[in-house]
Length: 74
Image (tube, rainbow, N blue to C red; front, side, top):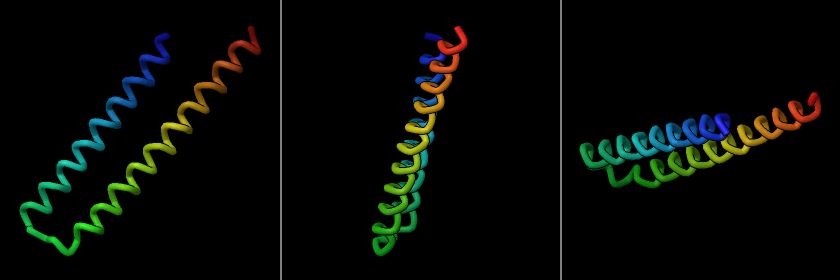
């Protein structure tokens, strides 16, 4: 169970970092009042979201492999 808590903690931290990044990007847009670059920022947000999803899937795969290895040794 402690591994699951650790994973959940990492996920929460990643989500917080992503949310902070989105907030920071939104603040930059407000400060500079750049309406023409909004689509670029939206694309960057989508890319970050996709990267996070892939990282999460990879993490789950590694954890699953660890469980299989531990039970295989046991």
